[in-house]
Image (cartoon, rainbow, N blue to C red; front, side, top):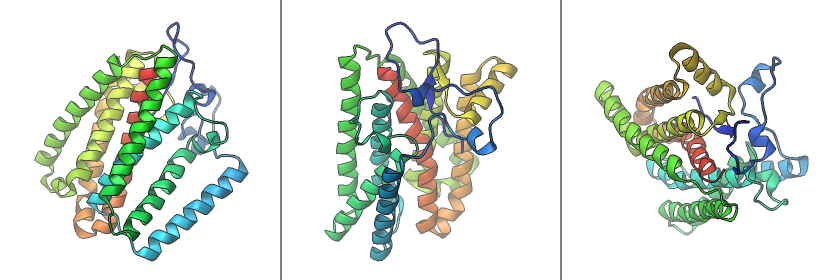
Length: 298
């Protein structure tokens, strides 16, 4: 699955906010190990004390989920979607240097995704114990995401860098592309319809990621953080002179292919199929939301 997130290039317009060094770190021309070549700039583990706490929290929440026999179906994946937005917004605040130093190590990549998963998992356990999951979990996620997004926008207002026009256009384009992509998918592969709203979410997430990346690179002057995604964009520019549109097409094809591939799995074993398809959605929606928010304020 091609997940992407972009960084600001050296062609930053005058007055733009300089993002965190981890977000704008350039890739050296020298050859890197394969594992590093597949990871985005700024990818790294937090300091050991934070890592120990994070691992302990994952184990504790995982144990609780297992003990209570919680399963992830369509409703649970949808309830977790706002938490994906929450994590993306927190990472943008990290990139902008707008988070307290004490929690900063937990908001880099990939720690922020694990930390948000732990908080969401703990909330899920609490709501399940009260007999009220998953919609209260979704509501809490919406509140958390809204607060984080407002905080990001607040940074843009305070620094006088708020510029929502192109990110809004990218969002509209992503939604439109997702609608077209889903319609085409169920026409070509009717069985994909069994994936329901989680399948739609996966296509939407990758469409928004693709559209936002294209706008960021071709219009706003950002650069791609993830080597594999950057390779696709550069190939598109070399072959067709259009890296952004080529990347959008690749993202839609990959997302549609993944949804079609998981259709039988979701039908035969929803308890395993839906979580995996939810992960596909997350690696598209998370970077896509991150792009939109970062472009809006940086």
